Length: 331
Image 1: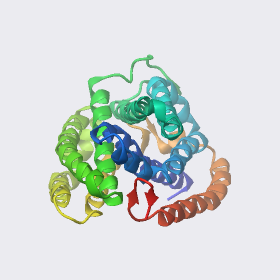
Image 2 (image 1 turned 30 degrees about the vertical axis):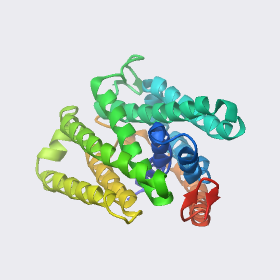
Image 3 (image 1 turned 120 degrees about the vertical axis):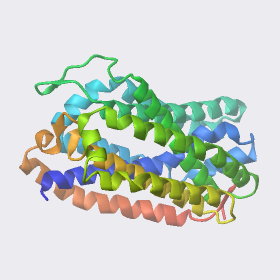
């Protein structure tokens, strides 16, 4: 255990927290056309209104932490995925603008609803493409990116992009089941029942494709002792999916979201096993890309203060806005 490992853990935590927190925000935007115009869409918006902008704090922390703690990785990864990152940022901008303007400009609410949906889809898809580009490998020569502008684009990165869209949609459905009632909740259950099988198919396709992208993936998953994790993983995923499916048919509104989080946790574990301890899989380890120890220590002091503060106000905001939401707000 050293400072580099600590910083890798901090960035992994920030990214994972962002994926979960902003994931259900984006998922609701992806599912938005599935809700009736009027009170249902208003209730879906109100379910994330108090927290959606704060959730993006973790994206800033993850990106800023990568720049500060692993500057070489930052300098290599960004040129490799400029296009999907720009698309992601544009999607987040459109999503945020549409979120605010649909309440103030009711004459064009349909256009803002469309912007909210398309912005959410674009941001989610771009994030998945970035993940796929990292997993399939980035061309490096010396200490610089050596690939072309379109190296990120491949059938595998498109597959991961679609997979993230589906996974976010499932998380958004679970959140709405937990936070809404009446027809909005019923439609969220219906949409969740459609998205869950599609998400499982996407997870299966990505899992079957990944070991053949890099030799280290195959070694870690199909050679002992990695085989000890590979064998029970499909059983665990199937069990969690079954409980998640059953929860969509039951009356406990919190369970679908919790089982989706369990499915996410298994995916995070699989991803960690595949790439650890590399920051760019098969190319660059966290120690090769790390900033000087003095810089890491200096930044860690500030992070040790800021992260608990962020966690505290995030927890407080979720606590204040706990419970069900109606069209007019929380009750």
